[in-house]
Image (cartoon, rainbow, N blue to C red; front, side):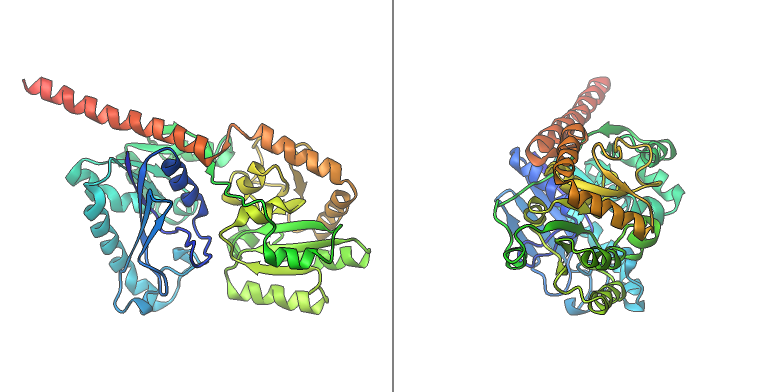
Length: 410
């Protein structure tokens, strides 16, 4: 099977860029099950325009502005919708036009197109109308917030199937009500490519802290995480000051990057509180599972987002924020997760103190999460097999329909 993936974000293994790792997991799942995959995604300055991964995955990064050094819409670590410069706004029509041209160029090769986000599904519609290609959509959330509702409804109605991979969450139930489509229920896919070795930058620090309790925050530094999701992106730092004052042995690692103002504020607080020996910003990593393997507790996850399933598939307990993002989900406080109150530093510090003093119970919570959530979150080999089965069914329906039309003509 030939699968064309259209996406705004995809990791760069050579440059250690982590954007769109969940799309990478899906691509790997397809490739591990024998499919050939082409990924079409925007180019950005300094990146290769072509990359080959594991033989079966070709990444095609298309240029949309001349010179390429002035391309301003796609930047590593920053979502396209986060670009606000005049140059970036001018380039939106050019990016869309070039995206469509590249989709049309490779559509004949594809048996099916998997569009990540509704905006790329919209750009795939000419390929459907001209070449009759099947389009499968995975909406990711930001697209549902940012595009007009009428446009998202239009797009959903014209795709051949939409993937429901976010489980029994209230927002996901509402999503399916608001945007009618032919839904396929499938689990989230995680490509858990662990080497088994502790990363060198983490090892250098932990060699001097053999008994330290490791707290790992994963995620983009942006204001949506801070204000909408109310994650303790910054609050972990003053809380670390309190834990250090209590004589606790621990270390906080951040894997991620993003808004420079947020990052500067975090670095300023680390210096202000004298936490250089306790809190470390590691930057963006492509080998995230290697870091997850060596933590005791994770932070940065939201219900079934990419960060959450990195911790879950590795059997690591994680802290989730009480409230809209995790309410009505299979997550249960003290059973398969540890809930913290939004914006409450005292509660966060208290829960971390408890975790440090009850490591066995924290480990059990992580194991429970891995077992209980296995129906919603799977590894790439199993996930790829399940997805390809549904894709084959969808393609076969198209063939059956063509045969039926031919018979009617006779």
